[in-house]
Image 1 (tube, rainbow, N blue to C red):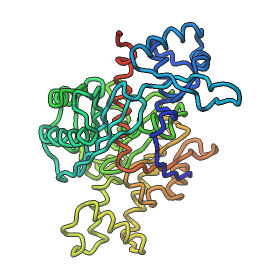
Image 2: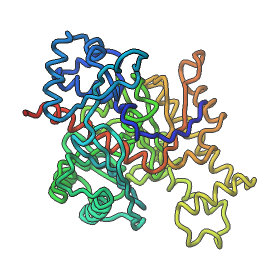
Image 3: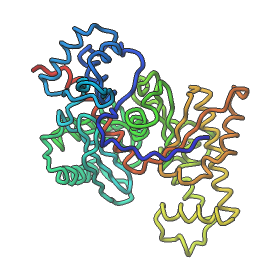
Image 4: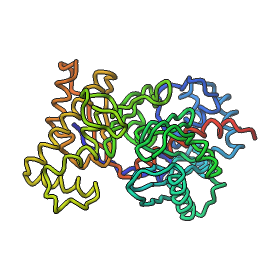
Amino acid sequence: MNIEIPQPDHSDSSLGCGPIRPEPDASGASLRHRVFESVRSAGQISRIDLAKQLRVSPASITALVGELLDLGLLRESQDTTRASARGRPPVALSVQPDAGYVVGIKLARSQHTALLVDAAGRPLAQASLPCAHRRRSLAQILDETGEVLDALLKEADLARADIACIGLGMPGMIDHATGQMVWSPLLIERDLPLRTLAEDAFGVPVAVDNDANLVTLAELWFGKGRAMADFAVVTIEQGVGMGLVINHRLYRGAGSLGMELGHTKVQMDGALCQCGQRGCLEAYIADYALVREASTALDPTDYANSAPDVMLQQLYEQAKAGNEAARVIFRRAGRFLALGLANVVNLFDPPLIILAGERMQYDYLYADDVLREMHSLSLNRDATPQQVETHAWGDLMWAHGAAALALSDIADAMAEQQG
């Protein structure tokens, strides 16, 4: 297993952002859209290289680039990657950073995080808002979202009218296409038009998705997954989520409600999950599952009034110190995780599985014996074990993904706008 703790730095726009596709994207997008996305992905690229990459004539590229320059979406600069000893460096194209600003916001039970990003994918400001660790109404959540949004914009000296789109994510079942919130462990209500209500509250276009997809988008746009055609991300925090990329694109399912790994059943009539059903995978390995069993390993006088995060940390420290009851809790959670990961391998056979989330600090969940058991439960045992990596970007990982969600949602509108 490879363990990486990346600290992404996107202050240099020449790095680019977004999926790196080796072949032209023939998904139905216009050629002008594909030109814009190719420049953004490359960071810096010449017209000649752009024509070769998209397999179109240099004359066509020149015309389309001219339109994008006139719209203020691209800019010209010296290509520092091709400086020569003689003459001036060739001219490179890059995204005009101030062509638009987007905000990514991750809503969570105890803290909301927000990130402001320019059109080139560079982070400009960040903000967070601690909040009560309890379920509440969507109206209350949107009020809190407005607070962290305004704090972020104040930091950047911008107004809501300056924002092209807000990417908004939370745990639960969120239909990206329709904007409907089917269910979330943060909320006391179900089946609400999240996107419409958020747009009414903020006066800005909003894109919504569940938090596991945000992490997957963060990897696809800014992380390890940029140059990978296929990979899976499994998140472990207050719940268990999964995101899947197929051919450089996030797969959501027919109704945008697929990839709910945490709610696949691993034991009939088993432990009660926060979704209301029994036997879900996350009911055995998520935060609340470990906290539920912590009383068997911790002194009640130490944890009676502790927050769940504190209890988890105490449980982990006890396991490290040799407390056998605490070790059994993590060992059991690791076995259920191995079962879940083996199911991912058997269903999709991704070349890479990325484990992400705050719980990656607990090495019991991705120890070598967990990965060996995952491989033993996989059908193709004779093959090389699946590559598994652990990424711990920190809490802003989710907001990075939300910003990528917003950038991807407005890309077509930006490139297709009329001068």
